[in-house]
Length: 153
Ligand SMILES: [Zn+2]
Image (tube, rainbow, N blue to C red):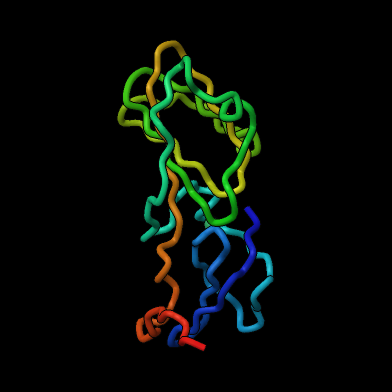
């Protein structure tokens, strides 16, 4: 699927583009921030390496799952999620890709940023959603300076 370039990373022989989903891809010399490239990693539903969980929902059951999760909804730019079922079965649908599967303990659902999806309890179920994003420090050069508080006026 199409993703916007947010950074250009110069490697030895070539260039890599970091996309707004968190993936990196090979870039042509003329690629610039703001360009739109195809992202195979998103098409395959692979969460970018190094992403960290920063938020989770309460545990939902078939009785407490919010209606908003059962309608098409999506995460924000750059935010991935994992749907983790502790008990029972949860239908997971992604209309744009045709995905229609059943999540259960051991079968995690991956939520791709900005891609509408919906879940439906199949009988008794308990699950949570964990949200992931790029760590704040990732993407900075290794020699980047740590954040400092602003100097007093
Ligand atoms: Zn991607």
